[in-house]
Amino acid sequence: MANLSADLATVEYNLGVVRERVAEACARSGRAPESVRICVATKYVEPDAMAVLRDAGVTIAAENRLQDMIAKQERFGDDFEWHFIGAIQSKKIREIAGRVSMIHSLATESARDKLANLEPPVPSLLVQVNVSGEESKQGVAPEELAAFIAATPHPVSGLMTMPPLTDDPEGARAYFARLKQLADEQGLNELSMGTSQDFAVAVEEGATLIRVGSVLFSDPNK
Image (cartoon, rainbow, N blue to C red):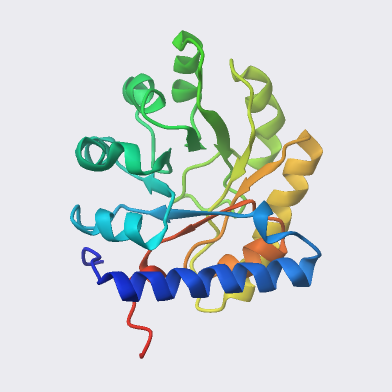
């Protein structure tokens, strides 16, 4: 994927469309639109385009890579609430935790156990669950989730998942529904699920956080 950049008018318009679709999905599922937060995945966002996101009204920047996040925070650190959504190297968990308000992608025992060395305040923690069972994806297996959470040295706020790639957003629904079921079983409230392609379905199934990126930069006339 190429790096993403666009003018303010395009991003403002697309963000408005995303908010409208979130509101419609919430209406269909009997929820308040305020129950869903929009995280913008900034992995492919050009550094200069971060200013466009800020000016368009984006409040949560969700980054995959620590070094990229550091570079962006040097320029825009106070402009966003920062989340981490990428694979975590256990040796970097301390620095990641010190830079974000939420980690979406806690997925390994090594990273989890390093959390014991952190002193409060600790960011909100979401456990990434491999609901689909794909070998190519990180995540805790559903049958191991309860034990993983019990061994986490700080409170877990919720769960995250990435369903298999599909051309039809409806193909992700069963995976989102399963994550909601797992969260309910564990008494967890936060659900990070849904991306540019399938966020409306994710909201219908209970997402409280969606992770969008390319949809904000696409030409609305195409």
